[in-house]
Image (tube, rainbow, N blue to C red; front, side, top):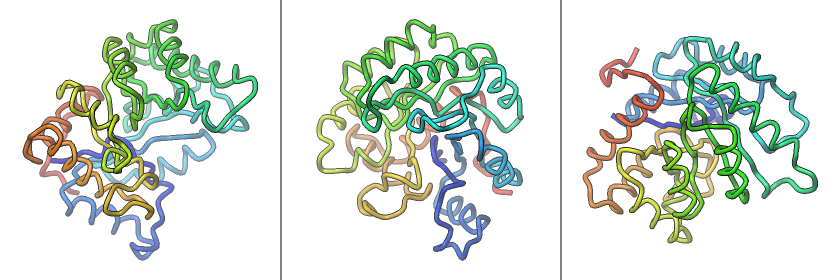
Length: 264
């Protein structure tokens, strides 16, 4: 059983699936991916995202506002806690810091991150953290706001081992995407080799960051199989072992009990 621990199903191109979301889900299940976490990036589209996946027990959701877009409506912690009470919701985020696409005074980004951490601590659900070109501030705010109390995952991890180690020390999991299949990802593959297996997740971040051999194309959840294959090669494991370990980690982190036979 494979789990795609981070994707954006509401943003996929359904053209190759005859504009049929059900067909996408069926093909994903047929590829051996039994569960997906559909991750929120803004509150405006959150209701439609819930509506899209409501008939699919193979899909869980999160609620949060991505750090990239300043013009998004800022959430109050109380609002995030209320939205996270939906039984399909398992996490707060994605949230974090991204200095790569933003410049100037970024206090608004840091404040948004702190609001999400506060919400996660209040509702007892883990955080999904995005960090890019902001590793020092990300870890500092996680420490200051006691993100350890909520726990969570550093999603689509692209930083160095030192950053991974600091996140692990705070009780967080590390999730790897198709980036680890890129030829340019030598340093990141070294991190894959060092992260404890019981703290590792895999993801697609679909529709973004398609892995080799689909790089440059639109990503889909079933391509998480390529991420699993790469992890298996780097760690000297069978693909079945990677699937078993990472799906078990996913269930433990997000408090779920998945039935690999459940396809309805």
